[in-house]
Length: 134
Image (spheres, rainbow, N blue to C red):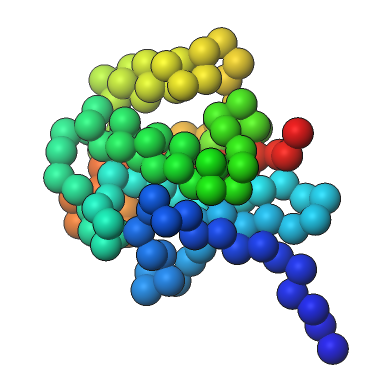
């Protein structure tokens, strides 16, 4: 008989992700904490309208909420995955400013993927993370 050792966390500050088929954070004893893709969303998970910079800031606010929901912060993030619709150098500059505003000079490893579209209409940016407990 298998025992599920995972801890799945869905902070009250974020929308209920179950209808979309995921949890906001997942961890297991002695293992990294995985934060699902966060994006500019309302309380129901619908994508919020806004320009790229506004969506980046909102996504990082939600990432912070997901981290705080498992007792972690930006300082615990070791890897980011970022996804940009219609990636160009202007959007890269916006992302760079957002990262430095949150991580200072202690930037985690990151993979940026330029994509044609994301999960919901209107989404321009999404970020996921891997964090470790101190």
